[in-house]
Length: 239
Image (tube, rainbow, N blue to C red; front, side, top):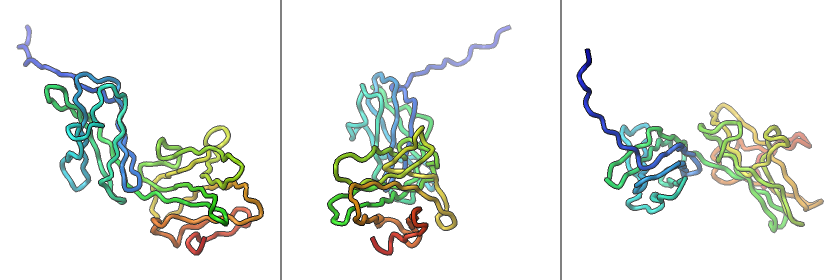
């Protein structure tokens, strides 16, 4: 005995094979990235987003108005969403559209938390030499090394410089210096986290000054620890 034939099913392949889609929340911005292993008759991509208060995704950009979202030979795309604010969380999806105007969604959304990124500034006594590093916390980062959140930094060069870097002793065979380190999220009302900083300079027997960016809303609890003298310095009590 044989059952009746099932209904005929027709499948149409998507015009782009998206194999990865990520979102990184930055300072008043979100960076989206997706990798594509092949495109065939793809007109371009559309970007949608929503937050926890919105039941449906809303279109925020499209290849129809943004030429950067249409490139049939590209193997990756980067898109920045600047219409966000610190403290917000957003969920994104993307779609591609074939030449018959059929839209295909990538079924794996990417979520990002938009959080402030703070800076420390280093300068010499005359402000003719300077450098900076960045640090932050984000619930989608970790205290381990995270791609894109953590940005490595090379050693200083030249005959005159001041140089600062965040230092992670156990990353790599000889440690890692960073221009930016974003650690995992934590409750700033109850917990603390520390960043280890290394400073070098060709300036000898002259003071160096460290200050912090003004977007740190807990200034009274931003301290620099001097491991040589064993003292804490409030960075907002003066340079």
